Length: 136
Image (cartoon, rainbow, N blue to C red):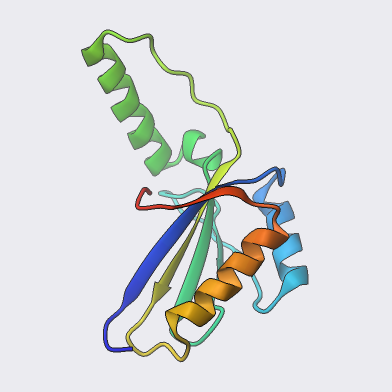
């Protein structure tokens, strides 16, 4: 692989917490998921499924509970509602999550291999309504 590659999927999930996701994903393998601590993303799950590859799962519920990304999102949504004369939105966790993958130019696996692993992990979480994501 000559250049770095990144992609992401948004998905709905009924798993109650990132801690529960971590338990399910670690039981499924093939990598060990750790809990991060980010002002921007809350407590994302992180792993490295192959050398030169990083994966992160962010729970949208955390993005509306005081993180920098959540507060920026809320501020923008409130601004749009006021400018457009719409009712002010409420922010609540609706089960939408995102998994993002970053592959360095030196990654030992190819995108198809890693995408297969990612899709398997999403299946293990019971993910549904999986869509390509450029958000977050």
